Image (cartoon, rainbow, N blue to C red; front, side):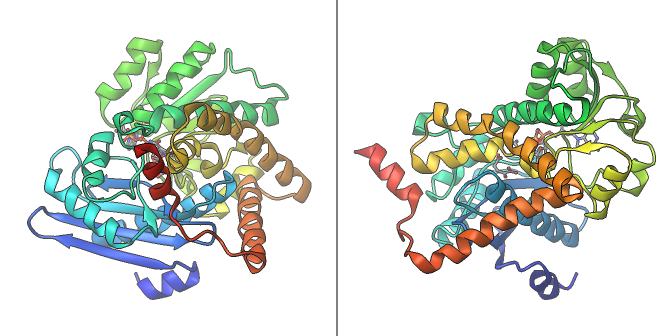
Length: 370
Ligand SMILES: NC(=O)C1=CN([C@@H]2O[C@H](COP(=O)(O)OP(=O)(O)OC[C@H]3O[C@@H](n4cnc5c(N)ncnc54)[C@H](O)[C@@H]3O)[C@@H](O)[C@H]2O)C=CC1
Ligand SMILES: O=C(O)CCC(=O)C(=O)O
C-alpha cells in the first residue's frame, strides 16, 4: 500500500502508528476527518494476517466513522484504531495503558471506544491514562457496553428497511439469516425472536451460534452456507467486505440489514444490490446506535436522551431509501450524499462563527465531579 497516496485520495488527516515493546502494543490510529468535531471511533483488536491488512482496516473503518457520525447528526469526526493481536491471548494491562497514553498525546483529536475484540474492561484501563475514551463503566457515570444499544438501533433500522421493501414493517414470520452471533448480534437475535422472526444463524465459533439455537430456537448453518440461505433478510453482524462478487452470486434475500461495519467490499457492490432488487440498509446508518450512545457521554451521559436519538435510526434509514428513490441511486450512494451534504453545510457555516474551543468531554466530566 502506498500510504500517502491512499491518504491523499480519500483525504485522511492523520495516521498514528504506536509501538510499545514492553507490552507488545502495535496500534494504528487513523483519523479521517475532523470537520464536525473530534474524531470518535472504537478500537478493534484483531489477529491481522499482515500489517498491510491492519492499515487497510484502520483506514476503511475510520472513513466509515466520518460518514456514520455525520449521518447520525453527531458533532464528531471520524477515526478508528486497530490493535494487531489476538484479543483472546495477547491483551495485558500495560498494553491498554500504553495505548491510553498515545491517545492522551493527541489531546482530544481522537476519542476511542469499544469495537470487535475490545471490552468495557479494556476501556476502563485506557481511562487510567486518558479522558478521551468512552464506553467506560457506568460506575464512572458513563454508558458502558455499546453493543446492546447498537443491536436496538439495528432492530429499528431493519424495520424501516423492511417497510421500504415490503410496504409494512412487520418482522413476524420473516426468515432472517444472521451472520455472526457476537455482542451485538446476540441481542439483535433476542429482539427479532421476540418479534416472531424465524432465525437461521452461523458463527465461526460454533458455541456462539449455539447460544442462539438454544435460546431462540434458531437453525444453525455452517459459516460458508449463510449466503445461500433463501430468506427475507440477510443480516451481516461479523466483519466487513462480505457483500462482494462471490457472495452476491449466492444471495437470496430481499433485504440486507445488519451491524457489521463496511459490509460492501467496494462501492459498486451497493449498485449491484440495487440491480438485484435487494433493499440494502447502509451499514453506517443502521449501526449508529453504539456511537450515539457512547457520544452522549461527552455531554454527561443521559440514557433516555441517548435512546431517543437511537430511535431516530428508523427515520434515518427511511430517509436514505427516500433519497435513493428520488435520485435513482443505490442506498449506499444516497447515504453518502446525506452525510457529505451535512459535512459540507457545516464546513461552510464555520465562516460565520467561532466554535467553542473547549473539549466537551473534559467539561462534562468536570461538571459531574462538582
Ligand atoms: N459493538 C458495537 O457496538 C458495534 C459494532 N459494530 C460492528 O458490528 C460487528 C459485530 O460487532 P460485535 O458484535 O461487537 O463483535 P463480536 O466480536 O462480539 O462479534 C462478531 C462475531 O462474528 C463472528 N465471526 C467473525 N467472522 C465470522 C465469519 N466469517 N462468519 C461467521 N461469524 C463470524 C465472531 O466469531 C463473533 O462471534 C462488527 O463489524 C463491528 O465493527 C458496529 C457498530 C457498533
Ligand atoms: O459503538 C462503538 O463501539 C463505538 C463506535 C464505533 O466504533 C462504531 O460505531 O463502529
